[in-house]
Picture 1 (cartoon, one colour):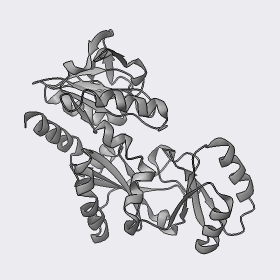
Picture 2 (cartoon, rainbow, N blue to C red; picture 1 turned 45 degrees about the horizontal axis):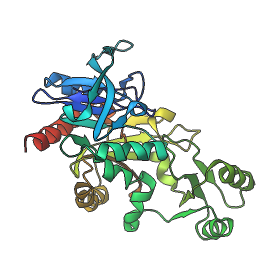
Picture 3 (cartoon, rainbow, N blue to C red; picture 1 turned 120 degrees about the vertical axis):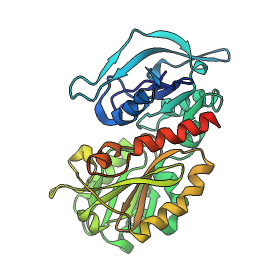
Length: 326
């Protein structure tokens, strides 16, 4: 069975294939962000079911959750129907789609440990161990040659030294998402002291300080990869009065092609993604600089299709079915 949830929360989704069962993890109350994946699964005859990660239980060796049958429709305001919850072992499913947004906290990490106990007999997409070991703003540090100058720190002297070297910088939480708490800090910026104090009391972990890329005004490209191969892309252009290009923050989606540099980035990442079992990944590239590798719940499928790009949802399900049949 398979299920979907409305994106941008800490809940789960599941799905079930015609020749077996699937599952996903998502948020409570379905929204349209992941409908493309669910609609494609349903079109192929896969049953869909839904659960949320807070309902996972491990009883002895059995991982169980109350799951609900799910039906989806491509109708705004009326795009899903959920059945009554029924307790079920997750090993009864062929596939579980792990679509859980940050925060990347201990609750999130614990859920990956639980799902790891049933993978790969029940195929979890993405591999829960791979997700756990690849926080998007940490995993990307494995590829410094593809990135802008970046510092991970909460030490004031280290941050000031980085600012002295690079001038304008962007400061953001290490485990943030969706463009939340992303700030541009200019040289001699009078707001820096207050922002440093706010970050210090808000975040226990270090945060990200990165050289500001002025070309972000022309877009932050979201590139989707399936099984380590390019699958589709959309350029996200920030509003005139905002630094952030995330579509949930008002960024405008534009059709785009890959540059030679962006193809080089995809080729460099592909082997590492396949090795970690990260079947569906979204990367962010600004002016030829890799800034993030999103392995938890990448978005952009619908925007790419709406702009006349490839059918990424079909590519994802082709890859999942090939794994199950292989």
